[in-house]
Length: 199
Image (cartoon, rainbow, N blue to C red):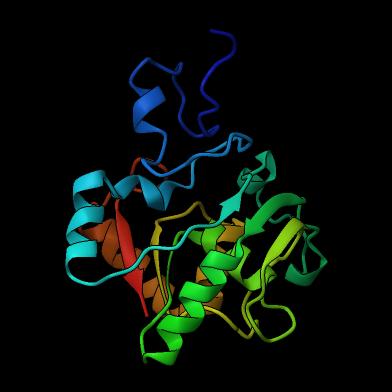
């Protein structure tokens, strides 16, 4: 084989053979990302089957996570930060499942910030539509969400665009409270860490 598993820069060790299975989602199919969509690492085949057995439908997107995902916001004004471009696909099948779920009174629960960025990029008209192309969407407090009702995500780095996204969704004060509790309870942070459910 050629190359190394692209672990995040805060994992200060060499990649190991275990990372080739542990740092991949069980449902990822399209090569291209430089990092795993880490909220998805919490889902194995058994859990997906249990959810399906309870009537929870899954729908998938592709977003090729770029190295810029690890870059902190360095601008004095959040809105001056320039996001990196990432390639994404939201297929018609995913749009149909989301639309049907909403019509039945169901919720759209995004697994990870990559899913949020994908669905929101495909919803800029106000309606979720199939999308294939690049996005540089930057979601920060004040953003009006168009496509999701809840979010499962890991605990993110300070000053990261990911932390700003979840603060936009749940509110800065609520996120501060959650992170304080996570620190007190010694939750694990970042890629191989714990996750939270945000409504």
